[in-house]
Image: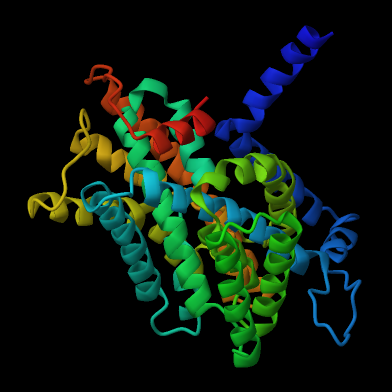
Amino acid sequence: MKKVLTKVINPLRILINDSRFTGMMLIACTVISMSLANSDSLAHPYKQLWNYNFLHASSFPLPSSFLSWINNFLMAFFFLVAGMEIKRELVNGELSSFKKAVLPFGAALGGMTVPALIFIAFNLNTGHLHGWGIPTATDIAFSIGIASLLGKRIPVGLKILLMALAIIDDLGAIIVIALFYGGHINFIFLGIAALLYISLFACNYFKVKSGPLQILLSLSLWYAIFNSGVEASITGVLVAFATPVDMLPKIEKAIHGYVNFLIIPLFALANTAILLPDNIISSLGTTIGLGIIFGLVIGKPVGIFLFSRILVACKLASLPQHVEWKQFLGMGTLAGIGFTMSIFTTMLAFKSAAFQDISKVAILSSVVLSVVVSLAYFMIISISMKSVPVEEMSIATEEKLELELQ
């Protein structure tokens, strides 16, 4: 019986840990959500489901709708996983030294700066400048998943660099959200949050191993941040950074499946209930649509490539072994696949449902374009190149690749 269960469970575990499956599931959820949102009979009840206010005003302000709970509370667990990945790489992995970190940090900076400038250029004389953060994000699950599909056409060193870049990109997006997309700041709650965070750090520093206490402090921290006006989901990153490194694998193992198979699908279903306009081409041709599409599809690879070229030319960084510049440019096109963080930023940047829908359609169009361009580009350049050997990598990164690239 045990052998039978093992034969069933092991393939399921591999499937759960496979980023390609996560990416495919995101696509499926998006297609389902958009189909329901554009159904004559189901569109209204479907949108009402996510926006239904089941909690009314009380002495203890909390998110009121399912959509708000998903974006403010459940997404904190997504950011917890992202934060743990960032911390692990900073301590033991590909970001643990200046020499290792300078290229992915520089590439990520270029991949955020150029798309933001492109969006600003398209929207300079409009009231939509607040959306500049939308095209700056890279979706880890999608980009790593597509990289996996390309197999040996992408050197291992390039996959590691893409993963490091995407992690730093997430960190940059988190900082942007925290600084530029919060509401009115309540300094009393912000002060309470600071005290709770210090308490959480103290518990971990003095090795107070009380799970219930740490959970209580983490939930209290989320509540204080939610009421402070700062984006509440950022709590996940703060908790991750306060957690000892040796505890990260255990926590990540416990919540990884829930994040990938419950929270992210719910996020996709709730946030892609997009009513497609009658003239979709005209919508994509708006300054918002063009800024997002050009920012992600063109700005990402151009920014990553240019900033990295400058760093290498100044001898501050070097390319990974067995990686050529034409392959590096292809990595930039993969980084142009933005989904989760881009849509999340959209919901914070624009209050208008019409602007949100235009932005989401532009993001989805950018995903399709970036995937097609990436697949075509690597297939073309691989014709003239031989397979590359597998180079050495850090322990932390090797563990992560085992998780992402089964």
